[in-house]
Image 1 (cartoon, rainbow over the protein chains, first blue to last red):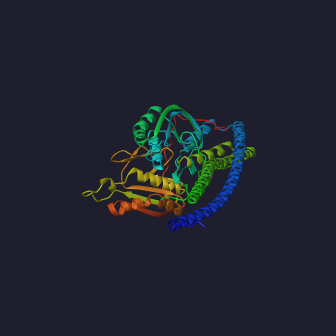
Image 2: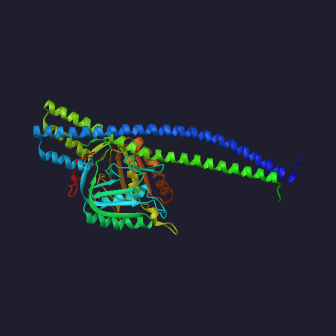
Image 3: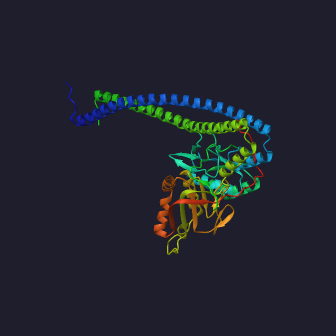
Length: 233
Length: 236
Protein backbone atom coordinates (compact mmCIF):
# COMPACT_ATOMS: atom_id res chain seq x y z
CA UNK A 1 0.00 0.00 0.00
CA UNK A 2 1.07 3.49 -0.77
CA UNK A 3 2.14 5.28 2.40
CA UNK A 4 1.41 8.92 3.10
CA UNK A 5 4.35 11.20 3.32
CA UNK A 6 4.83 12.21 6.93
CA UNK A 7 5.17 15.93 6.04
CA UNK A 8 1.76 15.95 4.44
CA UNK A 9 -0.12 14.13 7.17
CA UNK A 10 -0.57 17.16 9.42
CA UNK A 11 -1.77 19.73 6.83
CA UNK A 12 -4.13 17.26 5.22
CA UNK A 13 -5.63 16.36 8.59
CA UNK A 14 -6.09 20.04 9.39
CA UNK A 15 -7.70 20.73 6.05
CA UNK A 16 -9.99 17.74 6.47
CA UNK A 17 -11.07 18.95 9.93
CA UNK A 18 -11.68 22.49 8.68
CA UNK A 19 -13.62 21.21 5.70
CA UNK A 20 -15.80 18.97 7.83
CA UNK A 21 -16.46 21.86 10.16
CA UNK A 22 -17.37 24.15 7.29
CA UNK A 23 -19.72 21.62 5.72
CA UNK A 24 -21.63 21.06 8.93
CA UNK A 25 -21.77 24.82 9.55
CA UNK A 26 -23.02 25.39 6.04
CA UNK A 27 -25.74 22.79 6.44
CA UNK A 28 -26.80 24.43 9.67
CA UNK A 29 -26.92 27.98 8.30
CA UNK A 30 -28.66 26.75 5.18
CA UNK A 31 -31.38 25.33 7.40
CA UNK A 32 -31.59 28.53 9.44
CA UNK A 33 -31.69 30.71 6.35
CA UNK A 34 -34.45 28.68 4.74
CA UNK A 35 -36.45 28.94 7.94
CA UNK A 36 -35.80 32.69 8.16
CA UNK A 37 -36.67 33.06 4.48
CA UNK A 38 -39.96 31.29 5.07
CA UNK A 39 -40.79 33.52 8.05
CA UNK A 40 -39.77 36.61 6.10
CA UNK A 41 -41.87 35.80 3.07
CA UNK A 42 -44.84 34.98 5.32
CA UNK A 43 -44.34 38.30 7.01
CA UNK A 44 -44.10 40.11 3.67
CA UNK A 45 -47.35 38.52 2.53
CA UNK A 46 -49.06 39.51 5.77
CA UNK A 47 -47.67 43.01 5.61
CA UNK A 48 -48.82 43.41 2.01
CA UNK A 49 -52.34 42.31 2.88
CA UNK A 50 -52.38 44.72 5.85
CA UNK A 51 -51.13 47.49 3.58
CA UNK A 52 -53.76 46.72 0.91
CA UNK A 53 -56.47 46.67 3.58
CA UNK A 54 -55.29 49.91 5.02
CA UNK A 55 -55.16 51.53 1.57
CA UNK A 56 -58.68 50.33 0.75
CA UNK A 57 -59.86 51.75 4.06
CA UNK A 58 -58.08 54.99 3.21
CA UNK A 59 -59.93 55.32 -0.12
CA UNK A 60 -63.26 54.67 1.60
CA UNK A 61 -62.55 57.16 4.39
CA UNK A 62 -61.53 59.84 1.90
CA UNK A 63 -64.77 59.29 -0.04
CA UNK A 64 -66.79 59.47 3.21
CA UNK A 65 -64.93 62.60 4.14
CA UNK A 66 -65.76 64.28 0.83
CA UNK A 67 -69.46 63.37 1.10
CA UNK A 68 -69.63 64.57 4.72
CA UNK A 69 -67.94 67.87 3.84
CA UNK A 70 -70.49 68.45 1.08
CA UNK A 71 -73.35 67.70 3.50
CA UNK A 72 -71.79 70.06 6.00
CA UNK A 73 -71.53 72.83 3.41
CA UNK A 74 -75.18 72.30 2.49
CA UNK A 75 -76.27 72.27 6.16
CA UNK A 76 -74.31 75.46 6.87
CA UNK A 77 -75.86 77.20 3.89
CA UNK A 78 -79.34 76.08 4.95
CA UNK A 79 -79.08 77.54 8.46
CA UNK A 80 -77.24 80.54 7.10
CA UNK A 81 -73.90 80.46 8.95
CA UNK A 82 -72.16 83.81 8.58
CA UNK A 83 -69.75 83.40 5.63
CA UNK A 84 -67.32 85.81 7.29
CA UNK A 85 -67.12 83.51 10.31
CA UNK A 86 -66.46 80.55 8.02
CA UNK A 87 -63.74 82.50 6.22
CA UNK A 88 -62.14 83.25 9.60
CA UNK A 89 -62.32 79.57 10.46
CA UNK A 90 -60.47 78.65 7.26
CA UNK A 91 -57.81 81.32 7.97
CA UNK A 92 -57.24 79.86 11.43
CA UNK A 93 -57.11 76.32 10.09
CA UNK A 94 -54.46 77.38 7.58
CA UNK A 95 -52.39 78.74 10.47
CA UNK A 96 -52.86 75.54 12.48
CA UNK A 97 -51.99 73.52 9.37
CA UNK A 98 -55.18 71.47 9.40
CA UNK A 99 -56.20 73.00 6.05
CA UNK A 100 -54.46 72.02 2.79
CA UNK A 101 -53.11 75.05 0.90
CA UNK A 102 -51.77 76.03 -2.49
CA UNK A 103 -49.85 79.07 -3.64
CA UNK A 104 -46.68 80.51 -5.15
CA UNK A 105 -43.48 79.38 -3.53
CA UNK A 106 -40.36 77.32 -4.00
CA UNK A 107 -39.64 73.64 -4.20
CA UNK A 108 -36.26 72.41 -3.04
CA UNK A 109 -34.99 68.99 -4.08
CA UNK A 110 -32.08 67.53 -2.16
CA UNK A 111 -30.23 64.38 -3.13
CA UNK A 112 -27.69 62.90 -0.72
CA UNK A 113 -27.17 59.53 -2.41
CA UNK A 114 -23.98 60.50 -4.29
CA UNK A 115 -20.68 58.91 -3.28
CA UNK A 116 -18.95 62.26 -2.76
CA UNK A 117 -21.41 63.17 0.02
CA UNK A 118 -19.51 63.32 3.31
CA UNK A 119 -22.52 63.22 5.61
CA UNK A 120 -26.05 62.32 4.49
CA UNK A 121 -28.73 64.86 5.38
CA UNK A 122 -29.40 64.73 9.14
CA UNK A 123 -32.18 65.88 11.43
CA UNK A 124 -30.21 68.99 12.41
CA UNK A 125 -29.82 70.01 8.76
CA UNK A 126 -33.54 69.57 8.19
CA UNK A 127 -34.45 71.56 11.30
CA UNK A 128 -32.07 74.35 10.25
CA UNK A 129 -33.43 74.51 6.68
CA UNK A 130 -37.01 74.69 7.94
CA UNK A 131 -36.02 77.39 10.42
CA UNK A 132 -34.48 79.42 7.59
CA UNK A 133 -37.68 79.08 5.54
CA UNK A 134 -39.67 80.32 8.57
CA UNK A 135 -37.21 83.21 8.88
CA UNK A 136 -37.96 83.93 5.18
CA UNK A 137 -41.63 84.28 6.22
CA UNK A 138 -42.90 81.09 4.60
CA UNK A 139 -46.63 80.69 5.16
CA UNK A 140 -46.72 76.92 4.83
CA UNK A 141 -43.94 74.32 4.63
CA UNK A 142 -43.91 70.60 3.92
CA UNK A 143 -41.16 68.00 3.78
CA UNK A 144 -41.87 64.84 1.74
CA UNK A 145 -45.60 65.43 2.13
CA UNK A 146 -45.51 66.09 5.90
CA UNK A 147 -46.90 69.52 6.80
CA UNK A 148 -44.62 71.41 9.17
CA UNK A 149 -46.63 72.87 12.05
CA UNK A 150 -45.74 74.35 15.45
CA UNK A 151 -45.68 70.99 17.22
CA UNK A 152 -43.63 69.24 14.49
CA UNK A 153 -40.72 67.18 15.81
CA UNK A 154 -37.90 65.83 13.67
CA UNK A 155 -36.06 62.87 15.13
CA UNK A 156 -33.89 59.98 14.04
CA UNK A 157 -35.07 56.46 14.78
CA UNK A 158 -32.33 54.02 13.81
CA UNK A 159 -31.57 55.17 10.27
CA UNK A 160 -35.07 56.50 9.59
CA UNK A 161 -35.99 60.17 9.91
CA UNK A 162 -39.38 60.76 11.52
CA UNK A 163 -41.26 64.02 10.96
CA UNK A 164 -44.50 64.42 12.93
CA UNK A 165 -43.60 60.90 14.20
CA UNK A 166 -44.03 59.52 10.65
CA UNK A 167 -41.12 58.04 8.61
CA UNK A 168 -40.38 60.21 5.58
CA UNK A 169 -37.83 57.96 3.86
CA UNK A 170 -38.43 57.22 0.21
CA UNK A 171 -37.53 54.02 -1.58
CA UNK A 172 -36.92 55.74 -4.92
CA UNK A 173 -36.79 59.18 -6.54
CA UNK A 174 -35.41 62.33 -4.96
CA UNK A 175 -34.84 61.56 -1.25
CA UNK A 176 -35.94 64.97 0.10
CA UNK A 177 -38.43 67.46 -1.28
CA UNK A 178 -39.03 70.60 0.71
CA UNK A 179 -41.89 72.90 -0.37
CA UNK A 180 -42.69 76.37 0.93
CA UNK A 181 -45.40 78.91 0.09
CA UNK A 182 -44.65 82.60 0.44
CA UNK A 183 -42.87 85.47 -1.27
CA UNK A 184 -40.79 83.67 -3.91
CA UNK A 185 -38.04 86.33 -4.02
CA UNK A 186 -37.44 86.25 -0.26
CA UNK A 187 -37.68 82.47 -0.01
CA UNK A 188 -35.29 81.95 -2.92
CA UNK A 189 -32.86 84.62 -1.75
CA UNK A 190 -32.65 83.42 1.85
CA UNK A 191 -32.49 79.73 1.07
CA UNK A 192 -29.92 80.01 -1.72
CA UNK A 193 -27.69 82.29 0.37
CA UNK A 194 -28.06 80.80 3.85
CA UNK A 195 -28.54 77.10 3.22
CA UNK A 196 -27.64 75.97 -0.29
CA UNK A 197 -23.87 76.77 -0.16
CA UNK A 198 -23.37 74.68 2.98
CA UNK A 199 -25.30 71.75 1.56
CA UNK A 200 -23.43 71.89 -1.74
CA UNK A 201 -20.10 72.03 0.06
CA UNK A 202 -21.04 68.77 1.73
CA UNK A 203 -21.47 67.25 -1.76
CA UNK A 204 -25.28 67.23 -1.79
CA UNK A 205 -27.19 67.96 -5.00
CA UNK A 206 -29.57 70.86 -4.36
CA UNK A 207 -32.01 72.33 -6.85
CA UNK A 208 -34.44 75.13 -6.11
CA UNK A 209 -37.39 75.90 -8.39
CA UNK A 210 -40.01 78.65 -8.29
CA UNK A 211 -43.42 77.14 -8.76
CA UNK A 212 -46.97 76.95 -7.50
CA UNK A 213 -46.80 74.35 -4.75
CA UNK A 214 -49.58 72.55 -2.99
CA UNK A 215 -49.04 71.59 0.62
CA UNK A 216 -51.14 68.93 2.33
CA UNK A 217 -52.83 69.35 5.70
CA UNK A 218 -51.31 68.20 8.99
CA UNK A 219 -52.52 64.65 9.57
CA UNK A 220 -51.64 64.40 13.25
CA UNK A 221 -53.97 65.47 16.03
CA UNK A 222 -53.70 68.44 18.34
CA UNK A 223 -54.46 67.23 21.86
CA UNK A 224 -54.81 69.37 24.95
CA UNK A 225 -55.00 67.11 27.99
CA UNK A 226 -53.01 69.24 30.41
CA UNK A 227 -53.40 72.75 29.02
CA UNK A 228 -56.49 74.84 29.68
CA UNK A 229 -57.25 78.30 28.28
CA UNK A 230 -55.69 80.84 30.63
CA UNK A 231 -58.10 83.34 32.11
CA UNK A 232 -56.38 86.20 33.96
CA UNK A 233 -57.75 86.70 37.47
CA UNK B 1 6.95 20.73 -3.01
CA UNK B 2 6.11 17.94 -5.36
CA UNK B 3 2.80 16.20 -4.91
CA UNK B 4 1.76 12.74 -5.90
CA UNK B 5 -1.07 12.34 -8.38
CA UNK B 6 -3.50 11.10 -5.75
CA UNK B 7 -2.72 13.98 -3.42
CA UNK B 8 -3.21 16.45 -6.22
CA UNK B 9 -6.63 15.09 -7.05
CA UNK B 10 -7.59 15.23 -3.36
CA UNK B 11 -6.56 18.85 -3.19
CA UNK B 12 -8.54 19.66 -6.34
CA UNK B 13 -11.62 18.02 -4.86
CA UNK B 14 -11.25 20.01 -1.66
CA UNK B 15 -10.89 23.29 -3.56
CA UNK B 16 -13.99 22.58 -5.63
CA UNK B 17 -15.98 21.78 -2.51
CA UNK B 18 -14.77 24.92 -0.81
CA UNK B 19 -15.69 27.11 -3.80
CA UNK B 20 -19.10 25.51 -3.96
CA UNK B 21 -19.68 26.26 -0.26
CA UNK B 22 -18.72 29.89 -0.74
CA UNK B 23 -21.13 30.31 -3.63
CA UNK B 24 -24.02 28.90 -1.59
CA UNK B 25 -23.11 31.13 1.32
CA UNK B 26 -23.08 34.24 -0.88
CA UNK B 27 -26.39 33.32 -2.42
CA UNK B 28 -28.19 32.85 0.90
CA UNK B 29 -26.72 36.09 2.18
CA UNK B 30 -28.03 37.92 -0.89
CA UNK B 31 -31.53 36.56 -0.50
CA UNK B 32 -31.76 37.56 3.16
CA UNK B 33 -30.50 41.06 2.43
CA UNK B 34 -32.99 41.68 -0.36
CA UNK B 35 -35.95 40.69 1.74
CA UNK B 36 -34.96 42.97 4.60
CA UNK B 37 -34.90 45.86 2.14
CA UNK B 38 -38.39 45.12 0.83
CA UNK B 39 -39.75 45.08 4.33
CA UNK B 40 -38.04 48.35 5.23
CA UNK B 41 -39.76 50.23 2.41
CA UNK B 42 -43.17 48.71 3.12
CA UNK B 43 -43.27 49.78 6.80
CA UNK B 44 -43.14 53.59 6.33
CA UNK B 45 -45.96 53.66 3.78
CA UNK B 46 -48.03 51.46 6.09
CA UNK B 47 -47.51 53.81 9.02
CA UNK B 48 -48.33 56.82 6.84
CA UNK B 49 -51.59 55.33 5.55
CA UNK B 50 -52.58 54.17 9.03
CA UNK B 51 -51.98 57.60 10.50
CA UNK B 52 -53.98 59.24 7.74
CA UNK B 53 -56.82 56.76 8.29
CA UNK B 54 -56.89 57.53 11.98
CA UNK B 55 -57.01 61.27 11.34
CA UNK B 56 -59.74 60.84 8.71
CA UNK B 57 -61.84 58.75 11.09
CA UNK B 58 -61.54 61.44 13.77
CA UNK B 59 -62.40 64.13 11.22
CA UNK B 60 -65.38 62.20 9.89
CA UNK B 61 -66.68 61.57 13.40
CA UNK B 62 -66.36 65.31 14.14
CA UNK B 63 -68.29 66.28 11.00
CA UNK B 64 -70.98 63.72 11.81
CA UNK B 65 -71.40 65.20 15.31
CA UNK B 66 -71.64 68.65 13.77
CA UNK B 67 -74.22 67.47 11.23
CA UNK B 68 -76.25 65.87 14.00
CA UNK B 69 -76.20 69.19 15.86
CA UNK B 70 -77.41 71.01 12.76
CA UNK B 71 -80.15 68.40 12.34
CA UNK B 72 -81.26 68.98 15.95
CA UNK B 73 -81.52 72.66 15.14
CA UNK B 74 -78.72 73.96 17.36
CA UNK B 75 -77.79 77.57 16.73
CA UNK B 76 -75.45 77.81 13.78
CA UNK B 77 -73.64 80.71 15.40
CA UNK B 78 -72.78 78.81 18.60
CA UNK B 79 -71.52 75.92 16.55
CA UNK B 80 -69.32 78.05 14.30
CA UNK B 81 -67.99 79.96 17.31
CA UNK B 82 -67.02 76.70 19.00
CA UNK B 83 -65.09 75.65 15.92
CA UNK B 84 -63.37 79.00 15.65
CA UNK B 85 -62.25 78.72 19.29
CA UNK B 86 -60.92 75.21 18.70
CA UNK B 87 -59.00 76.35 15.62
CA UNK B 88 -57.62 79.31 17.58
CA UNK B 89 -56.34 76.99 20.31
CA UNK B 90 -54.77 74.69 17.70
CA UNK B 91 -53.08 77.64 15.98
CA UNK B 92 -51.65 78.83 19.32
CA UNK B 93 -53.64 82.08 19.48
CA UNK B 94 -55.04 81.42 22.97
CA UNK B 95 -53.03 81.75 26.18
CA UNK B 96 -52.87 78.40 27.96
CA UNK B 97 -52.04 77.31 31.50
CA UNK B 98 -51.30 73.92 32.98
CA UNK B 99 -48.67 71.70 34.62
CA UNK B 100 -45.30 71.78 32.91
CA UNK B 101 -41.62 72.56 33.06
CA UNK B 102 -39.42 75.63 32.97
CA UNK B 103 -35.90 75.57 31.53
CA UNK B 104 -33.48 78.43 32.03
CA UNK B 105 -30.38 78.74 29.85
CA UNK B 106 -27.82 81.49 30.26
CA UNK B 107 -24.39 82.41 28.95
CA UNK B 108 -21.40 81.72 31.17
CA UNK B 109 -20.33 84.46 33.58
CA UNK B 110 -16.74 83.35 33.03
CA UNK B 111 -14.57 84.55 30.11
CA UNK B 112 -12.75 82.09 27.88
CA UNK B 113 -9.09 81.90 28.90
CA UNK B 114 -6.06 80.80 26.85
CA UNK B 115 -6.88 78.09 24.34
CA UNK B 116 -10.55 77.85 25.29
CA UNK B 117 -13.14 78.35 22.55
CA UNK B 118 -15.31 81.37 23.39
CA UNK B 119 -18.17 79.82 21.39
CA UNK B 120 -18.55 77.24 24.15
CA UNK B 121 -19.42 79.91 26.71
CA UNK B 122 -22.64 81.21 25.15
CA UNK B 123 -26.10 79.79 24.50
CA UNK B 124 -26.61 79.23 20.77
CA UNK B 125 -29.92 79.28 18.95
CA UNK B 126 -29.36 75.65 18.02
CA UNK B 127 -29.57 74.56 21.68
CA UNK B 128 -32.94 76.27 21.95
CA UNK B 129 -34.16 74.64 18.75
CA UNK B 130 -32.97 71.23 19.95
CA UNK B 131 -34.79 71.68 23.25
CA UNK B 132 -38.00 72.75 21.49
CA UNK B 133 -37.74 69.70 19.22
CA UNK B 134 -37.24 67.38 22.21
CA UNK B 135 -40.18 68.95 24.06
CA UNK B 136 -42.54 68.56 21.08
CA UNK B 137 -41.33 64.97 20.80
CA UNK B 138 -42.20 64.50 24.48
CA UNK B 139 -45.78 65.58 23.79
CA UNK B 140 -45.65 69.25 24.78
CA UNK B 141 -49.02 70.95 24.25
CA UNK B 142 -47.76 74.54 24.20
CA UNK B 143 -44.31 76.14 24.42
CA UNK B 144 -43.15 79.69 25.04
CA UNK B 145 -39.64 81.16 24.92
CA UNK B 146 -39.04 84.44 26.75
CA UNK B 147 -42.76 85.19 26.53
CA UNK B 148 -42.96 84.34 22.81
CA UNK B 149 -45.42 81.61 21.91
CA UNK B 150 -43.90 78.97 19.61
CA UNK B 151 -46.32 78.54 16.68
CA UNK B 152 -46.24 77.22 13.11
CA UNK B 153 -44.36 80.28 11.90
CA UNK B 154 -41.95 80.76 14.79
CA UNK B 155 -38.30 81.07 13.82
CA UNK B 156 -35.43 80.75 16.31
CA UNK B 157 -32.76 82.45 14.25
CA UNK B 158 -29.26 83.52 15.19
CA UNK B 159 -28.82 87.17 14.25
CA UNK B 160 -25.34 87.74 15.67
CA UNK B 161 -25.53 89.31 19.12
CA UNK B 162 -29.13 88.27 19.74
CA UNK B 163 -31.57 85.51 18.81
CA UNK B 164 -34.60 86.42 16.74
CA UNK B 165 -37.84 84.73 17.81
CA UNK B 166 -41.19 85.70 16.21
CA UNK B 167 -39.42 88.71 14.73
CA UNK B 168 -38.41 90.01 18.18
CA UNK B 169 -34.91 90.35 19.63
CA UNK B 170 -34.23 87.98 22.52
CA UNK B 171 -31.23 88.10 24.84
CA UNK B 172 -30.09 85.63 27.52
CA UNK B 173 -31.26 84.31 29.92
CA UNK B 174 -33.60 82.23 27.80
CA UNK B 175 -36.62 80.95 29.69
CA UNK B 176 -38.37 78.07 27.93
CA UNK B 177 -41.71 77.01 29.38
CA UNK B 178 -43.81 74.06 28.23
CA UNK B 179 -47.15 72.54 29.23
CA UNK B 180 -47.54 68.78 29.11
CA UNK B 181 -46.95 65.55 31.02
CA UNK B 182 -43.93 66.56 33.12
CA UNK B 183 -42.52 63.01 33.19
CA UNK B 184 -42.67 62.66 29.42
CA UNK B 185 -41.25 66.14 28.90
CA UNK B 186 -38.23 65.59 31.13
CA UNK B 187 -37.66 62.10 29.71
CA UNK B 188 -37.65 63.39 26.11
CA UNK B 189 -35.37 66.23 27.12
CA UNK B 190 -32.84 63.86 28.68
CA UNK B 191 -32.96 61.66 25.59
CA UNK B 192 -32.01 64.51 23.26
CA UNK B 193 -28.98 66.66 24.04
CA UNK B 194 -29.63 67.68 27.65
CA UNK B 195 -26.35 66.06 28.71
CA UNK B 196 -24.36 68.02 26.16
CA UNK B 197 -25.56 71.18 27.90
CA UNK B 198 -24.64 69.56 31.21
CA UNK B 199 -21.04 69.21 30.03
CA UNK B 200 -20.98 72.86 28.99
CA UNK B 201 -22.31 73.73 32.45
CA UNK B 202 -19.60 71.79 34.24
CA UNK B 203 -16.69 72.83 32.06
CA UNK B 204 -17.61 76.31 30.89
CA UNK B 205 -20.07 77.55 33.47
CA UNK B 206 -23.18 78.12 31.34
CA UNK B 207 -26.50 77.97 33.21
CA UNK B 208 -28.77 75.00 32.58
CA UNK B 209 -31.70 74.72 34.95
CA UNK B 210 -34.82 72.56 34.86
CA UNK B 211 -37.83 73.10 37.14
CA UNK B 212 -41.01 71.06 37.25
CA UNK B 213 -43.99 73.27 38.04
CA UNK B 214 -47.66 72.73 38.88
CA UNK B 215 -48.64 75.59 36.69
CA UNK B 216 -46.98 77.47 33.86
CA UNK B 217 -48.60 80.11 31.68
CA UNK B 218 -47.90 80.20 27.95
CA UNK B 219 -48.91 83.46 26.24
CA UNK B 220 -51.01 83.65 23.09
CA UNK B 221 -49.39 83.96 19.68
CA UNK B 222 -50.27 86.68 17.20
CA UNK B 223 -52.67 86.15 14.32
CA UNK B 224 -50.92 86.38 10.98
CA UNK B 225 -52.80 87.02 7.76
CA UNK B 226 -51.68 84.93 4.80
CA UNK B 227 -51.16 86.64 1.43
CA UNK B 228 -49.89 83.78 -0.71
CA UNK B 229 -51.44 80.55 0.54
CA UNK B 230 -54.99 79.75 -0.56
CA UNK B 231 -57.11 76.98 0.95
CA UNK B 232 -57.67 73.98 -1.34
CA UNK B 233 -59.67 70.79 -1.00
CA UNK B 234 -57.52 67.77 -0.36
CA UNK B 235 -58.65 65.07 -2.74
CA UNK B 236 -57.72 61.40 -3.05
